Length: 119
Image (cartoon, rainbow, N blue to C red; front, side, top):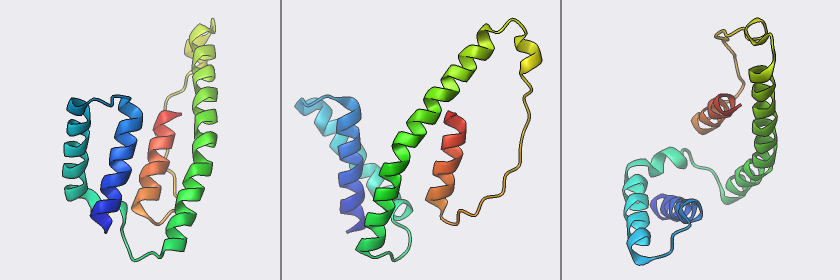
């Protein structure tokens, strides 16, 4: 069941992102989704969660997407401001920050790290 659900999610995501609906591209999408599902279905669905918990995770993630898109947009505006500011070198102060999180699940931590990278 994990394989089938992972396959359907990946294939759907691939079709949405590619926008190609001819046989050639759909075959590549099916093949790549199948290979990734074989190798990684345990990574996406880790642990024995019930259907209610899964639906809750999906709903929380769907609510998270608009917030993330807003933050990416605001970060882009901030970078544009810094790039065009006459004292750009004085305003930029790069550093590495260590951050402790209460997130327990690997997928949550990866999503969090990717969100930081995108913004």
